[in-house]
Amino acid sequence: MAYRLVVADLDGTARSRRFGVTPGVRRAIADVRASGIRVCVATGRMWRSAAPWVQSLGADTPVILYNGGRVFDFDGGRILYERRLAAEFTRQALAVIRRDPDVQPHLFLNDRVYVERRHPMTEAYAEDDGLGYEVVTAFEPLLTDDPHKILVLGAPGKLEALSSAARQARLSARAVQSEPTKLEFLPPGISKGTALRAMLEALGVEAGEVVAVGDNWNDLEMIEAAGLGVAMADAPEGVRARADHVCGTADEEGFRDVLERFVL
Image (tube, rainbow, N blue to C red; front, side):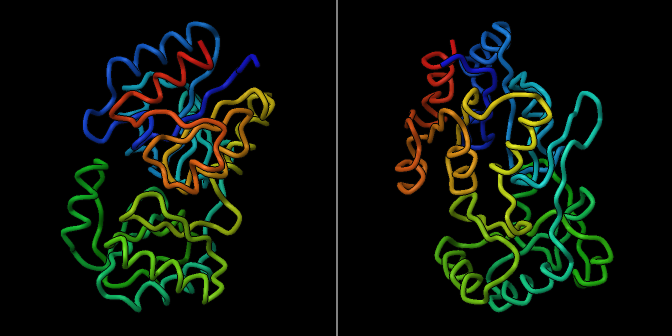
């Protein structure tokens, strides 16, 4: 199969959490792009947080942001596709999230991040993602606009319980785990897979001509939508089982191996 597009998750896939963007990955991306094949990023981050890493990778436009909520042409400064979490659905999700005081919700609205209290989990997250945030008394007065998403930080067991509570409450928002300590509430029906289809329409590329690579549940729909879907070795078993191929971890430059083996 001749592939025309590679789409990769950022954290834990194209970017190693230990080593950042490695020279081997950067070199492989440059070689793929030199051969005329586009390499794009799909991430849960907003553009301000993703931009330094996209630039370090040398990746192409457009980029998938907010776990599928936006497709952004950063060269042209244009939003190609966007779906937001309705304010009504946000209120429903917050009512469930607030049952546990040990988890920390973050509201993403108009490319800004809001919290209702300071917390060490937020400090660590903000430092890792290179983000500022604003503390507000309550989220509800902000909901005159629809948010992009809610990110909840917490211990893995706490988030598993929250995910179960969200299912039992039959929330309209979609809850998906992006890391063991991160649970995200997205617009219903929205995923990196739906955003990938919007990207393909904009680029005039067929799904069979795409390689998609990711490391967690929030990447699954994208992996399944591509002609070749690849899971990282440390992805959850359920994600690896539904991928076409499993590569090494980000620390092992698994993404570089995918580019060299299947694209170059």
